[in-house]
Length: 200
Ligand code: IMP
Image (cartoon, rainbow, N blue to C red; front, side, top):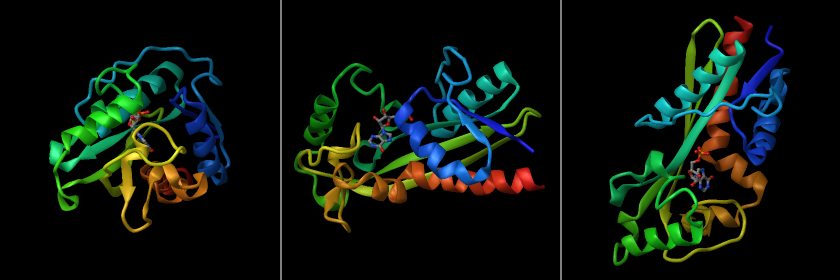
């Protein structure tokens, strides 16, 4: 029986969502801060899977605990998958999302709806103390809008348009976003995988 899981993130907003979704595993979910861990991790993978595994494995090695880590980003088909794994670093880590979002809208100038397809992707990796690794992936499909819309969410949400809902992901309630989002889907899949392993 595992009674503690470390989720390798420093983002408290994510921790709230993670605790809510993983609640029924019956384990205490600690952030890096809760676990008293302060290590610099080089996220130099070329895929979301690689980065999530790098983070989970390093923290598992440092603590000996079962560790989960996630990596996520926005893939725009017309830009060959950019910004992808570089989503947080696109145009510089400290550049505002107003500028990043406007830049992506500008790069898609004149591109019609059917070629503006994009998705948010999230991969969660679990690193077990015995060296086993499992991963789960979730995605949400949409198109890149023509202007920023909405005040909710964060990052690229104001330009990520959901045609079937007639709004951007920045205009969804938090509950709805958790239900539809890449991270919500990956977390629920990971929970099911963990249940299988922990009950085996
Ligand atoms: P990370 O997984 O925390 O490294 O996030 C990668 C980056 O992808 C974030 O900094 C955002 O730019 C982008 N991103 C990931 N998920 C979302 C989302 O739900 N909405 C908007 N942007 C997101």
